[in-house]
Each structure stands twice: as structure tokens, then as C-alpha cells.
Image 1 (cartoon, rainbow, N blue to C red):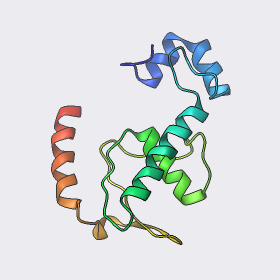
Image 2: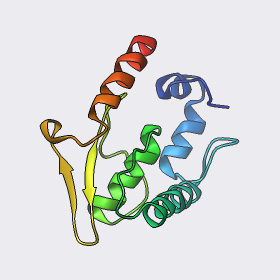
Image 3: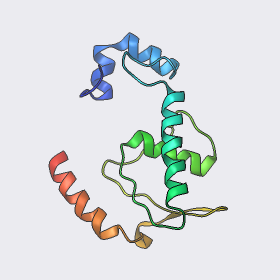
Image 4: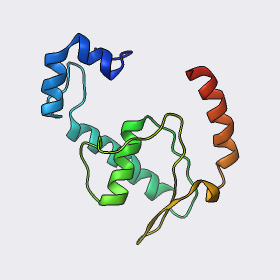
Length: 129
């Protein structure tokens, strides 16, 4: 139902439905995903990545919602609505993760995907804008 609409468009078109959803993320719009289902899906994906690719460098490309959920679980060890911070469109966040630490690398210390990401960013940004 909301596919293809920005948040602002959906809010203007279906204000009551969106207000209900914002009040309780486990009451999604028709065809939507409850927040607990979303968290479980993203957690299952990320747990699989950590298990299958331990000690390896991994590139995850995804929409902002799942990425925010992964980042929130890493940084504050909690899950749920992640609207308290945002990620820029076509952005790169570089983490180093081990059993005890999560390190966010500043842009000047980005890892092995830096050149690939810059190329992809330039292509996507030319399509996006």
C-alpha cells in the first residue's frame, strides 16, 4: 500500500493510518511488517552474516531501516524503532567488529571497499537526483 510513496506523501494521503502506526509500530499499515517481525528478520540476517563470515570483511548494501537496526544493535545492544538517528542516502558506514568492540572508522580510514563504494555512489547519485 505504501510502496512508491515517501513518508510525507503517505502521511498526507493516509494521516489516521500513519498516526496509528507511529503510535504503535506493531500496528503497521495493511501489508506492512510489525516492528517485532522486522527486528527478528534483520537480526536473523545479521547473525547469519556474523556466523558465516567471521573474521572476514563483508559489505552489506541495504535500505536505511535494516542498516539502522544493525547499527543500533551494535552500538547500544538494543533493538526496536531506530528513528532516533538517520543515515544519508547512498552513504558508507565502516565498522570494525570483534567479540568485544565496535569501532566506527572515520572517512579517512575507510576499509577495502572505499573505491567500490565511491564508484557505486556516483552511479546511484546520478540516478537518484
